Length: 124
Image 1: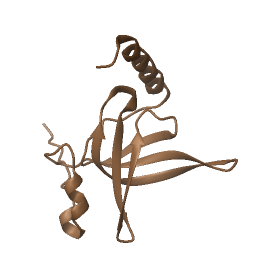
Image 2: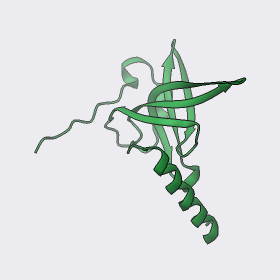
Image 3: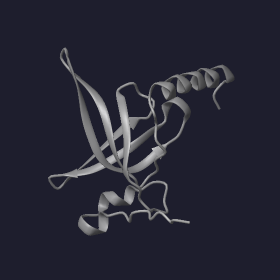
């Protein structure tokens, strides 16, 4: 358990970061497009990493999530800090229908078995 003063500072920082950027509600199983600031030497550019959220860890200011994509038959995973100033935008592309909180089993799968069903929206 964190001391109260640290919890208060975390809350302040989260409020400041939430005011600067919109953080969508996303869960493991969702496909997201994450925009990240990359600085190469004195140049800055935005890199987009698009893939499946396989894990999400909510722990105040150090909250993070892991995104996995397959490029050229090779699986690439990247962990992003939700409140990092380097993460400029998170966009949900499609919602996945999964019954697990951590989707590490996707790592062992290839092709069609690695797909996630899309969550259907029910019109009432």
